[in-house]
Every structure is written in structure tokens, then in C-alpha cells.
Length: 244
Ligand SMILES: [Zn+2]
Image 1 (cartoon, protein in one colour):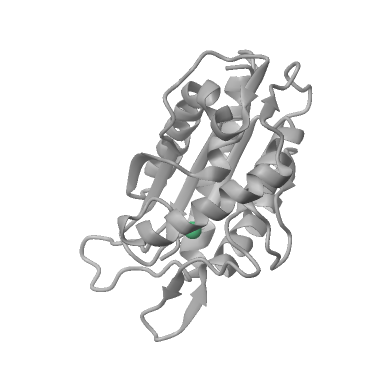
Image 2 (cartoon, helix red, strand yellow):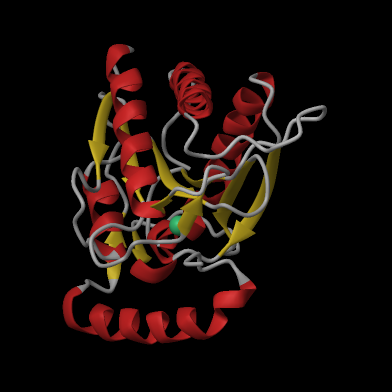
């Protein structure tokens, strides 16, 4: 599996982390500038995790078929983008194709967009329901300049609030949700409320087989609930500052 928060991939994550450090030292500014002021436009960033050389996990279905996680996240990204656009929400995506995009570029896209919310989309064939993750960085006071690798620290409170709203919307739609904290390079460098959403098979009581993440109806319900959460987030954001 390919998720940094899974213990079984500790070795691979370590080597990825080393590679990320090298990349950081070559290309990435040491500081992330906080957005100067809340944007008048409500921008949401959707991050379809993985892509290109990074296939993510393999999502096997009951019928014997399977798809790479990178394909699932891109499909959910497209579905969710159109739902949000239909509600007048401006969406920026970190990728629109099967491209290899490193985590710093994804974070930079979100930070440049002055996003009011970012959802990083993942999927897993293990576990059940929807797993939500907020950065495990300890919260800090917002500063004009934040260290790139821990820029999210100043946004933890808002990210937890966003996760709570997503949790409510998914639970309201009848889904099982688990909340967690984790270290994710993409999220940790974002200067916006940010939540990683991992879709796992749906296990319903009284149903013999779990519903695979490849199930179109399940995907549609997940996307609808995520869109509802973002719409609610927008309406609440109108009454308070977008800054943490
Ligand atoms: Zn993933």
C-alpha cells in the first residue's frame, strides 16, 4: 500500500522521505508565505493523490477486477469538481491527467490558489467507510511566514473544523467515518484548511459483501456528501475570517 500513514510501508515511506528531502533542498523555498488577506473568491483545491509513476494502492473488487488508486482519485476528483462547479464554487485541481506530480508542487498549487479548503483524495481496499485525516503537526500561531515543511501547523484548528464538517456530511449520508491525524507531506505544507479523505469499501450491516470503492453508486454518494460539506463550509466561512 502506498499511504504514508500505514505502518506496513514504514521502510518505503522512509526512503520516499529521504528523496523528498533531497527534492526540497533543490527546489522548494524554505518558507511558505501566508495569504495576505482572505480572497473574495471562495476557492477549493482538489488533490487527486498519486498519478503517473505513483500508482498508489491497488483497489481490488469482489468481481476480480482491480484498478490503481491513482485512477480512482482522478475519477472522484472529476466528479466532485463538477458538483462544486455546479454550485458556483471555483475549483483548482493539482492534476487533471495521469501525471506524476510531487507533493511540493501539489502544496504550492493550493497555497498559490489561496484556497479556502483543500481535500486530498485517496482510496484503500482495506478498512471500511471513509477515513479522514488532518495533519499531525502541533498547532502554532499563524505567522506572516511559515516554515514550508510545517506550514500547516498554523491551520490545524481550521483543518479540524473542516474535517468535522466533512464528517457530519458523510455521517448524515449514512456512511461510517473514522477521524485520524497523520503526517502527510502534501497536507503539512499547505496554508489552508486541509483534510485527506480516504475512501474504503462500505460495509453495511445485513449485507453479505462490502460495497467496493469501484461501485458507481457509492462513488456518487461520497462525492455528493463531500460537495454538501464544502457548500456548508462556504456558508460558515462567510461569517468568519478565512485566516486561522
Ligand atoms: Zn493514497
